[in-house]
Image (cartoon, rainbow, N blue to C red; front, side, top):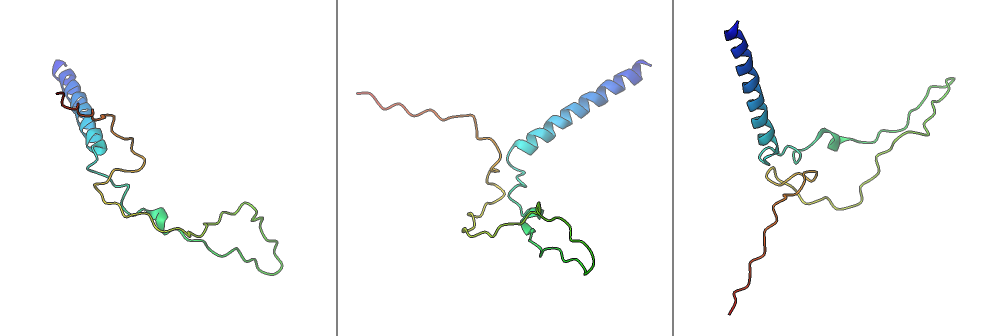
Length: 101
C-alpha cells in the first residue's frame, strides 16, 4: 500500500517537472513556429454564389470578402526572430555611467 502511494507521488512529481520543461522550452524563443508559413496565408476570395433559375438566392449581406493587398510585403522573418505577439524582454539594460574626471 505504501509503495503504491509513493509511486503515485513520484509519477505526479515527474509530470510536473516535465510540464515545466515543456513550457520553458516553448517560451524560450528557440521554437518560434509563428514565423513559419501558416494555413490562413493561402486564403483566397471566391466568386459570389450563383443560384439556379427558380430558386431563391440566399441573403449575402453578411458575406465576408478578403480585401486586395495593395501594400508592399513585410520584411521576411526567420525562425530565430521573436514572434510579433510575444511580450518584450523585461530586462532593460542600464546605461553606462560616464567616466568622471
